[in-house]
Image 1 (cartoon, helix red, strand yellow):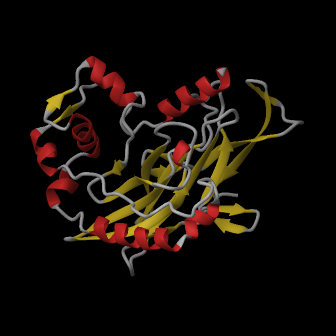
Image 2 (cartoon, rainbow, N blue to C red):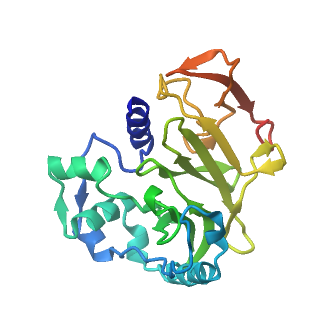
Length: 285
């Protein structure tokens, strides 16, 4: 129980998109006027025996429903919606009217009573849409990246079938690699032995859609994903894993941690080994 509590608290703090405690949270009239309701992913769960079965991801009605949802997200082209801060839009979605949050509402908003589904800036946004049939006990959802160029919005599926034992375990960050946009989607698993997994994307200039950016060498070749154990002790300090984007640039190096019986790092009853990955100009090795 202590491990679960620590993981929940750590992942709550890990999501910094809306977790600032230093300033007022409010729903301005301008954001409220631009507010859009979260679109739904709709398909029937009939005939799907186990909600944790990955076969659901290829269920034809689900695949068709995702295509319909992506077409709906492409219609999110209203300039006022894109100009509104995503934090303000989330607060408006929570309050359903223009207002400043009271201390009690602020606490409820930041500590799990509200499930954040919108992240990003005035040009690139991440939306996290719940799945009605897959991993519903663990917040099963699909993640989509929206790229606005001119008066058009280009939609890409970033994570198919995301789920986590932790609440509000997703965030987004941006960096520049020369003139190229780098998009980071950071996630956390929760649970007794929580892990952090980051996914990286860039915008394809030919299609204006988000495509994987392979920044790492994995077991089976280049990949856009990187995973680390999450530290319980001093996880917010210099030893923090997966600090890959710093001040909108890619870090020259970062740490990951892996469970290892011979590891020299003791962390809340686990033994871990540390690996430092360094940038060689093309990827981290």
